Image (cartoon, rainbow, N blue to C red; front, side):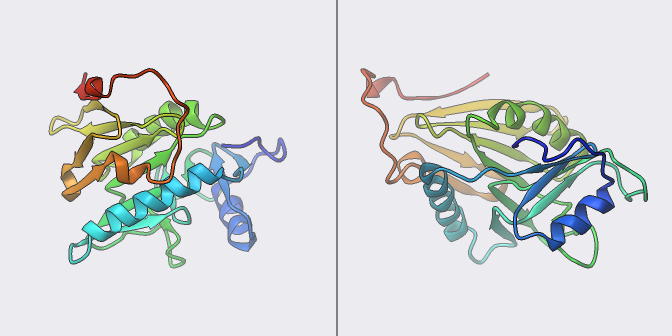
Length: 214
């Protein structure tokens, strides 16, 4: 999330009106509107790789993947006229299953995502791991998986919702590994996720690459 363009307080309705008239993307957090920064080439490549990998596996299923331009609402509903609290975000990838539920007739704000994936950037990583995930947990009851994909090394953090409503955290590291998003029956092969990405040479033993949970 980039710096707020102005220290004004906006309602959610203000934000939606401005965003629908804008050629650029912005996120909304508790009355503040934030312009989204441009992405690096590696960020774009990883997003494309993920879209291809997941989209090809969802063919013929009730689930569909969208990339980058679908807003997700995390906050109380229905929207009150003067409400400033809540989060409107643009996940890098979002998967919804079954019939999509939207905020209004514009059908540009999704309310029932099942899987959200963010490709981490230095400017947004803390927010993606912290406050954003907290909002998702609190306000998105359909969300079953939240994945954070590193740009700097072949590592994916996979948050999985348990039957008791809590969350389990898994790490998948190394280009030889893969992980399963069980809720949508999709496998992510790390070598495919990071296809065309070059990492700095390090003295790692590939045999130590592993998937572990805590």
